[in-house]
Length: 158
Image (cartoon, rainbow, N blue to C red; front, side, top):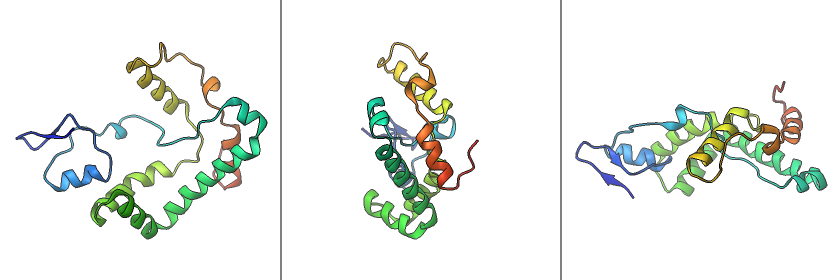
């Protein structure tokens, strides 16, 4: 639900690019950009421990494909802008702003971070979907295969 206030601010809405930029082009003002304040994974791969154990090459191949797609999006700006405009049903200006935001998010090496996972856990606790955020990182995130792929693709990994 989007409700416009007389002040020109949006109420009861959280818009994502490119819709955010469309609303701003219509005179609405951004009140808060949460993404600029906390580290949060943009996307991720979720699978069962059993799948990682029994089919690691398959999981590794998916991780590699996702990372290669991200790399292509960063290298082929015009192609990516076309995709954003088509999928987001938006104009070039909003697509450019969306690309600029995505560029930073896509630049990572594909490995989950402790801070990002902790922020997800805290958000789930706040929504009442988890009783506590005190879950050890290594019980919910396995970085081994993503680290292998990152090294293979030339990321500087420590």
